[in-house]
Image 1 (cartoon, rainbow, N blue to C red):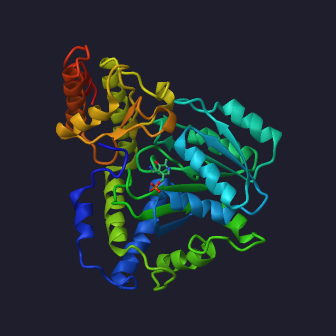
Image 2: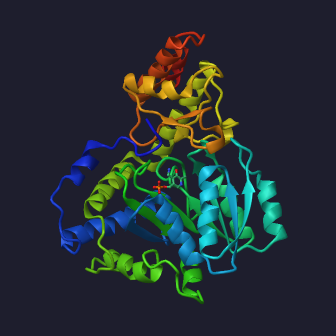
Image 3: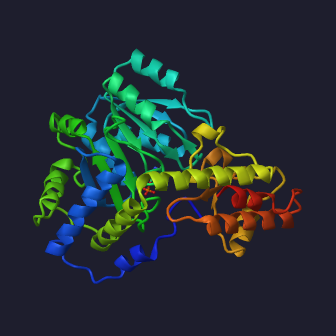
Length: 379
Ligand code: PMP
């Protein structure tokens, strides 16, 4: 129950164990082509260009920056935690002049503040973290997309902790890049960087004056490969992670079969229920309010006298793996519970049950069963 890697479906894991075909085997080419198509479907983009590359989410962030930024370009980072600040560092590596709008911990940057900033200065690109995994804060992707369109700024959504768990309508909301990785709500073991770029973003890339400074990330190398796979033709730039791509096709098929709206709704219910359960136990959440709380993970604060180091070990003895805090300045004050992918009522009950057991053992005063009751009532 950590916020990635998550528990994977057995049908997906079975794909990891098949004999690895050649990356130019016609059957594998068909799987790759279908995965590109399904990835766009999950991001709700019809005209975008999908990329599937062996690497992780950080590389997907790197790829967008490397291809869209040239030295001296102005970029705005809307930061809701650890991963926003990471994006600022990445953009600077490619020569961007970066401004950061940093939200107070557990909150978002208000839309009016973002608009004021976009009015005051002309930016080429803005980035935001849809769900910041360090704070469990959810940004309003639709409104940020609209601001991007209004001020003609490329919008890059870091969806590593949101794609396939939180609603994203890339095309309708005017988002230029939606990027993610395989190991979270997409439901595939770590190792794939996934990205869908709008045609607008591709045109900005095509008008570049300078060569992309990162060889492996360069869309000049990858665009012909992705287009070849889409057209069911063999091609090579760098060897794809063949088994991971086979597993990706399977997981994306399962996601589409569940139906995107149903899946987002299930995640919404999981998020609402887990937050309600934590509040019933008297635990505060790092994400300040319901409208801007993620549905893919929760970040409860420890009661003041609970020792964080032994808490997670004791939870793990109860059979549940949770994650510690990630924000360096607060890391011993909160923990994180992932609830994405195939998570079900039993998982939520077992998790809250384990938390209650350990809290009880540590002498924390609360009504035993009050957290699990929220799961039974609401999920
Ligand atoms: N962005 C967010 C929101 C993330 O949660 C993560 C990973 N936890 C990353 C980026 C980086 O992804 P990776 O660890 O796959 O490089």
